[in-house]
Length: 266
Image (cartoon, rainbow, N blue to C red; front, side):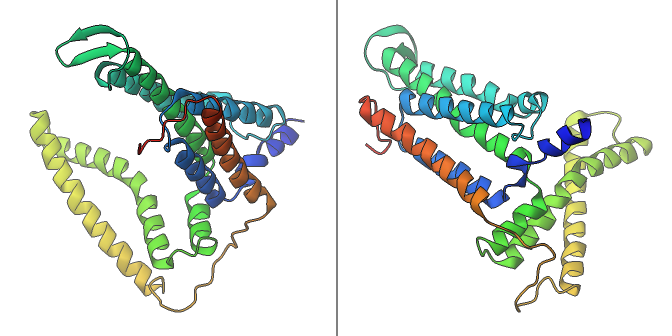
């Protein structure tokens, strides 16, 4: 029974092509950054919550709630911090509640702070949820095969992304090596500066070796490439893209209908 539950959890959003997730997140973000008001952001956030709860109830979300809260924790922290900054230093309007030097808390700054916090949540949460399940190789396949981006750029970016995780191991090994030689026992700033320079040199050497190896294996060819795995873009992907677009359009329509539409350029 547990095997069936685990297998069902891998369906749904995990099977969607990464470029569809990227497209949905970009469309939603584009709709929300056109206006600065709390109604559109609150509407989008509410619709996103309903969609997430529906997927979780059907076992199609594919993300445990513990993982969700841990991965989205930076967004939950960034939203109130951004709101606090806007509330203290944002454009004043209406009744001024408190003022000191450059700080001015008013009705206008508080409303703008609320809109900012909701917008950060409405844009950040779905982006994190969508990209938790994204594999870098699948994303590269989709960018090259579906979006037709240059293969050299996509493969180079994929190789660089794969090497990012090695930086942490390199930093730890460099620290241990320097301490074994009696170099890094004192002076944190001096030690960190030396390690950063050493890591930079190591990254250049590794990147040069990787570039040479990829060229030798034909990754830099100008002919038509073949791919080990085909990237599919079907009805499930279109459904995700349309859902992201619809959430953004409903949020805009709600803001216009309630008279809270505040075009960012205007």
